[in-house]
Length: 201
Image: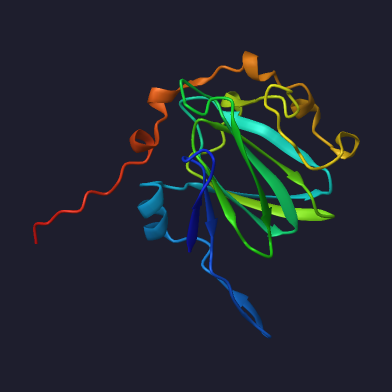
């Protein structure tokens, strides 16, 4: 599996090797050892899936502490523009984002750590979107920020008149009104410790 660093080093792209022939294809969609090598120890507890049509935008979402979530996201069919926004106050990348096209042909995945808001927009006629979470959904701590806030400067690659959002997402707060996380509490080495290899037989 190929692992690609993005403009925000904490956000990673995973590209599996796909084996295909006239019967179909096979690939490893997740390997714990590869994941721990590049991210650290993560325990996923919930898998989610959604189906959406062209222009549907879901986001930008996050959960407030102590129910913050990391996500490993991918597309089962179709293609989406996937976006992760750093909302960790004090982070060198605070307010910046990573935007990545995920599609069913490449089967690439985006790792979105805790301390980031996440959203995606469907680029294909329809898309099935799936992701793993390291914490359970908690409605009482559900939060978000406005998808088209000019302060974020996100280029969604679809004309705004074609974008469809939920009533909730249409009135999310602007970035400057979001209760940000403290960077020192959401540094990767604290959230996802590395396994220490012992030399003792």
